[in-house]
Length: 269
Image (cartoon, rainbow, N blue to C red; front, side):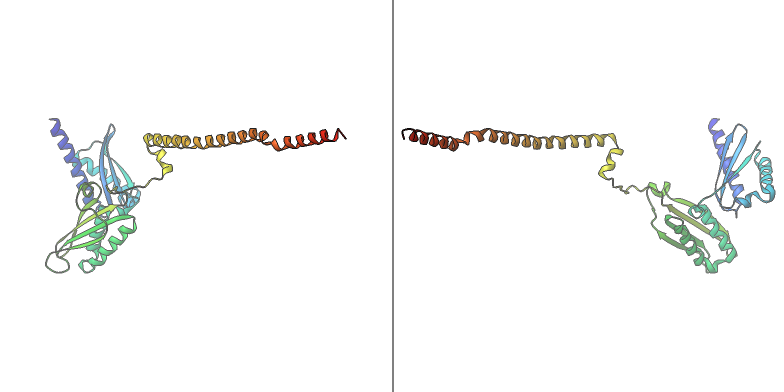
């Protein structure tokens, strides 16, 4: 019973998200989340153009809350709007913009639309971007066109968790055209990224490395001690030399003895 309840709640969230995306298709939606609070259901809508969702004096918000109460049986739905800071770095906004441009200008300018989109995405600070446009463009035979720029992971865990992927579709005269956008932001951490740390910064990384540095400094102090001992030995040698100097005054004593012999020689005269 509990599992069925969870499945029903998730299914309702998915249906609400699909309904809001169909109604607010040209408002630049990034993501839609639903939170349950004691006061009621809180719906977060992140968009690049929140003014289109609000409408004149909040007319669209009141209409959306009324529709959510009637169609999905929500007691007290509260809609909260958030503005996307970097719209060209979000895959869903880029895919929606490409689909709207194809519906507006047609298939004759699809290459210009694709190249402009990848340049804008890379200018926003992304590491890599890939755009796939598939359908009957420009001829009556279906093809898939690929626009690629930068560095993008195609396999591994990073391709799933570190790459933003979104899908959209454009309704044209020739048929339905699918748009797939994959963006790898610059903030994605790669497993082969290496950071070089200076020796002065090692003390701030881990306590174990700090202890290694301490032992090295102690060893350097011990190495310095013998040098001081050598200076002491040299002072001792100097003192010993100073002590030996008085013993070298033998020629002075000999002079004194010669003078004494002269005095003895002068006495008989």
